[in-house]
Amino acid sequence: MSEKYLPLEGYPTVTDADMSEQASGMLKLLSTRRTIRDFDDTPVPRAIIETAIKAAATAPNGANQQPWHFAAISNPAMKRRIRLAAEEEERAFYNGRASDEWLEALAPLGTDASKPFLETAPWLIAVFAQKKGPNGEKHYYVTESVGIAIGMLITTLHAAGLATLTHTPAPMNFLRDICGRASTEKPLVLLVVGHPAKDAKVPAHALEKKSFDQIVQIWD
Image (cartoon, rainbow, N blue to C red; front, side):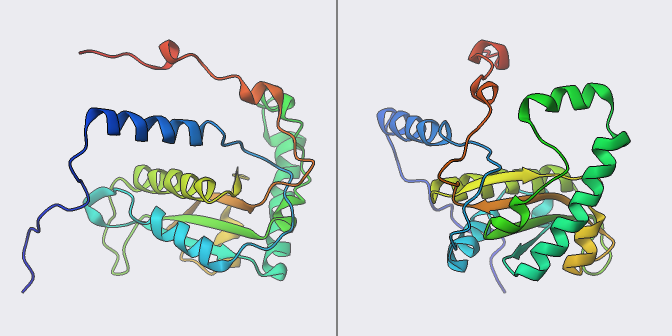
């Protein structure tokens, strides 16, 4: 019978200087992350994607239920099906489903219903949130848990030198059908993964971030 508790590992003693150096290094790395829409079609080894998903699956989650499923897709036929289904939803979005206010907010990005990156990028990762377990048991803190895992997935891929796009056409039920997932699973994001195209650009306003004082309040 396994022990109920095991000794904590993975936290070696570090000095304040060590912590500061490592935190600053992570800030520097993540400050270079950009969401892109112009991908190169250069292949990315499957092993890299698998390692990134394994890292994401270490995310904290409610009651250790691990309420996620990652569908990693490089198959051209599947990517084509996903693009066609996503663009159908996007056309409905841009042609009436979205409010004028929403479209105005998107205008600086220059986006439209055309999503060629869904076929150009070497990998798509559909992330599903599982409302229930295999025996019908209810899962808790599902959205929070899967959201954290997605953040860790993006961070790992960026650390590996890959670019990502969090694509979220609404609704995304077509992903369940294409990936053969259960009706109790909700697709939360379609992550587009690959190398940036050589001429890739990002909107200038995307580099403008709120100041630290605008986003933080500290009591000490």
